[in-house]
Image (cartoon, rainbow, N blue to C red; front, top):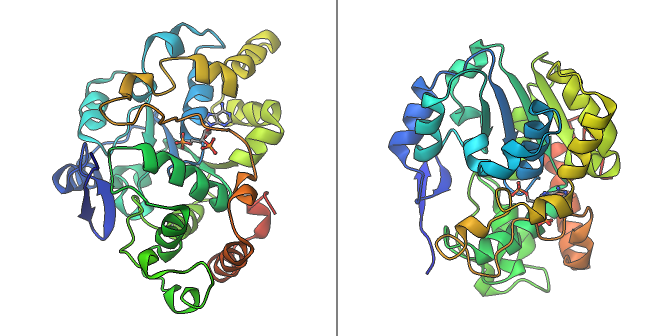
Length: 308
Ligand code: A3P
């Protein structure tokens, strides 16, 4: 079984759980409250890791919450019908996850004091992670090969790399299928959200810094959210949000969704490393990606991208 997508304002979404009506309602009339905390990512950037970490910070390292409630209920996706309904019923400060591009995000956020953490990741790793994920998901048209997914990913919206790509050795006519990457172009998503980077209620983090210096990153999150942890509470946050701990936590990995939404071999926690793209990209793909990144992101401060 393979899933289908719906298009809303030129961006594709899995048709299961997403609809133009809900997306419009969320954009126009979902109320973000000042005390809400928003966890925003392009898919496959480490969303679940961030959610788990923030949940553990909220519970001061206590694992009861993360082990008793599914991750998508603890921090619901505002853009899904399920998540949106759940959020409306929640009292008090809410954790809210989202993959939405900035132009589709609830308008109320931009007038609120709600804090947002935007987590980025080397797009090459986002691409590889996305390929393995969507290939085992029953939610969208599945990529047939990494070459095809690479093509979809770099096409993005409104960007034609095709002319140059057709001269590459790995290019085949089979690669020429319409872009099926959901949530739009990584480049647009990242550029657009980064325009918020000077705002006080906006924190940019990267998967890479989380990986290379997890403790400092958790401390940074605590400071941003005005949460104070005792040393042993911080240790517990680190221990229980590790790759291995999350893999063993059935409320955070995918076993609950297997069968219906994912194949048996589908994994949310696949490898959990930085730089895995080097094991998959050809030299030609690496070159084309470098050029594209330069073209699309050159005018942004490059220290925002720690993976170089
Ligand atoms: P890989 O597929 O490269 O392993 P998202 O939650 O946005 O879908 O991102 C999934 C990616 O984050 C996967 O990357 C997954 O392994 C990684 N990830 C999830 N939890 C992690 C953790 N605790 N430590 C490191 N990586 C983690």
